Every structure is written in structure tokens, then in C-alpha cells.
Length: 391
Image (cartoon, rainbow, N blue to C red; front, side, top):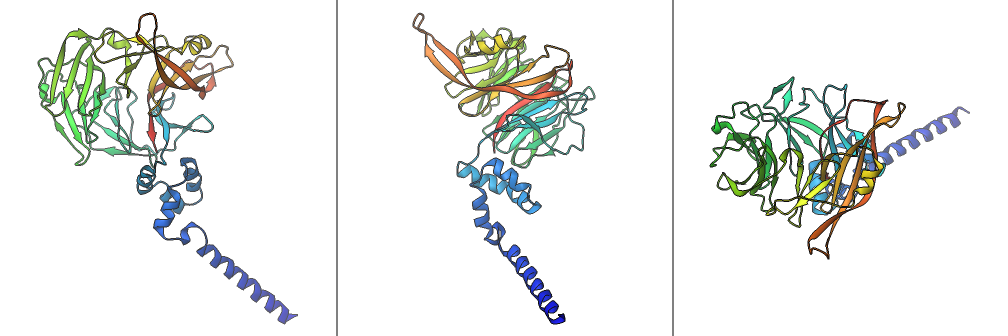
């Protein structure tokens, strides 16, 4: 009996050793690192998220920037909608991502070790993530700049600006430099009105801008196709063209923008048209050389279905689709405030009567993506920024 027990114990020990060795040599980690990363590059973003939950070792590989570069080269990256929103009574804004399958906004577990502005910031998107520039902290303008990395969902501090700014305008030029205009208290000092951030050297420098007239607060701006010029409108409706090569603002003669305060979230589409968010739940469009905006048709159903329909944010979803957000107010005391979202394609056709182009929004999907925590919330959702980023 004793001998059998010893043999059985020895067999169990061998079995455990065998299983341990099998565990050590099997799986993706048993292949060379290059092959391992190559396998990961062919997975979807959701698969990588699931894999990152398995272990810390997988998590580090799945969230690496090297993998992001490889997936980009293979055309395996896809748009993800990110939202930066302040929800009271939370003291700071938070980042959310729209789940592509569940179609709900998921709050990201981002570690904030410093106060974040709740208003007045400007946002710039580059290849890796989003810069949050300036804004108001405790009611005062700040020079702070933070960066949200869309690959690993982390936030870090970038080099602060030389001037504290709130309500500034910022543009990424030639994928290398961020130009920031205005937003400073000492607007009379033109030498400090603009500064530029070099993404390679990570340094800020003041920019001496040549202009026949110092623009007032820039209400809206959009980078043109050559990535070297900015089309901008100030709060008085004066139209400017900024050249980064000459560092010059030129005011257009004979043309002004009407109601610039009611033309928000400007976008430049591939077919040369400008788009913006108007009032009353409307999306407007025009060509840069035109003065009059026209309404994009096709949103009438949403306008009729939702009482008080008013778009609060307008952005691109991908190269072909656009997206809008709006609030659905509670209709009875036991209902929660909801944030709704819609994606749509833009198509165009010529009106046979006047031979003019008309644009139509063809809605692909719409629905509620977030609900407030309490019924009949009277506090609006402060959606500060929304952008689609390829990851």
C-alpha cells in the first residue's frame, strides 16, 4: 500500500510538472515577439480590449504604440468616437468612448491627478490623441495643456503655454505644429496674441503675426486642404485667411459672416464644402467662396420626433460619415435626461428648378447613448468636445 501511494504521489508530481511545462511553452508568448505582435495586429479593437483583460503582459502589448503603427500600416484601424463631457456634480470633465456594438457611451478609467478646465478650452487632434489647451480653472484662465492618448487611454501633462488663455482658437498645421490664437487677457499686446507648439521639440514660442487688423476673438476656424492655411471668422463676422508659411492674417474684402455666434463646429469636407452646426437642430453648408449658408436636408424626422431638438455637438465619424449629439429632455417626472447620437452620410443632387446643389443627410443609425443618473435632471450634460479617432 505504501509503495502504491508513493507511486501515485510520484505520478501526480509528474503530471503537475508536465502541466506546468505545458503552460509555460504554449500560447502566444511561446512564439517570437515579432510573430506575437504580428498576430495581434490582425485583431479588431474589441478583441484587443478583451485580450488586455487577460493579464498585464497581454495588456501592455495590446496597448503599445508599436502595435498601433503596425495596425495602421495594415489598414486595421477603425474610427472610435470619443467624448469629453462634464457631468454634474462631478468636479471634472471625463472621457467616454462609444462602444461600437452596444452603442452606449462607456466612461474610461482615466487617472486625473490635477484639476481639469470645465470651460474655455480649445482642442486639437493629432495622429495619437487629443490636446486640451487652456481654459478656465476656478474661473481663471490657465496655460496648462494636457494630452489624451487614444491608444492606451491615458492623460498626461504637456508643456504649458507661455500665456494663460481661455476661449482661444487652435489649429494643427502641416501635422507638425499647433498654432493658438487669442484667448489671453492682454489682447492689446499683439506680440503675445499668438503662439505655436512644435510637436517634435515640445516647445512653445510666441508668433509675430502680420495682419492689417488684429482679429478680435476668433469665433470659428477650419484648416484647409493644404494643411498650411486656416480659414477663420472673428466675433464681428470678419473673414480671415491665415498662412503659416508667411505667418500672415489677411482679411477678405467685401465679405463678412452673418451671425457668427450661431455658426458652430465648423468642418471642412473632402468635396470642398464647409459645414457647421446652426440653431434649431439644423446642419448648414456652403462653399468657402459663398456667403449664404444652406440647410442640409434629411434631419426633419429627428426634428419632429424630439421636442426642442437642438444639436449640441457636430463632428466627423469617418471620412464618409458625420455625427451629431443632442439632449432628449424628460417628458414626465420619472424619466431621465438622455444624450442621443446619430450618424449619417451626405449625398448631393441638383435641384431641377434652380439648377443648384442640395445636400441630404441619410441617417445610418440614431439612438440614446447615455442616460443621466437621476430622473428629471434639470442640469444639462456639458458636452465639451467630441471627435472620432482611428485606433
